[in-house]
Picture 1 (cartoon, helix red, strand yellow):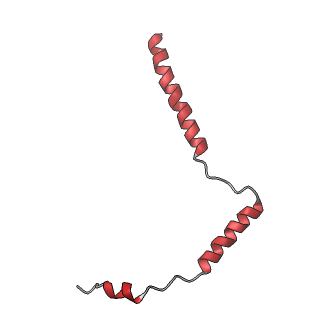
Picture 2 (tube, rainbow, N blue to C red):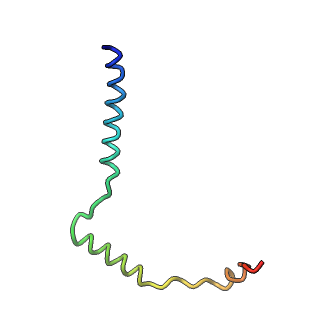
Length: 66
């Protein structure tokens, strides 16, 4: 019986730790619909912006013909 108790303690602690990690690792949800729409609008604006051009220094240093 004492061996069973010695096994139940670490198993119970492991189950509790797994449940705790599962609850803590859930993705955060937006608090309100307005917050969700604001973040979506910011992402769309970022996707519409053009990428910055590479400077001439970076293009000259890359030799792909060799």
